[in-house]
Length: 127
Image (tube, rainbow, N blue to C red):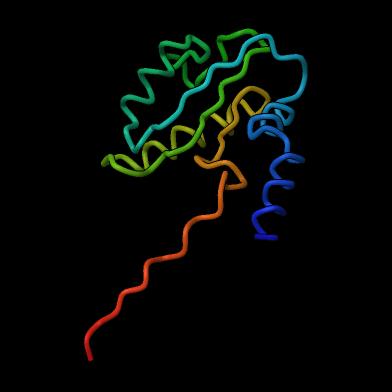
């Protein structure tokens, strides 16, 4: 019970999950585009990226095409479910490396769980 109370207090004192990554981008952001749940689908991620028009993917190397005070934030779930885990991670990493002032990648889950997970079920096997 005390542990649950401590978790609630920690959550109340914690920043919203997006505050820190957006602060790392710095400056006064005028627009932020969020892309989430890539699920190892690099092709879909590229389509979303093209729709934002923030990155010129036709140039080599890629060029930032959005305003300097715009940001692109990936929300996580990069590698599960699809067949292009490596490609999805490489795409996000390429963007972060090329545009560190404009691109941020977050983990898929907030740093604190909303509740303590229930204990695992106990399985009794006959002897």
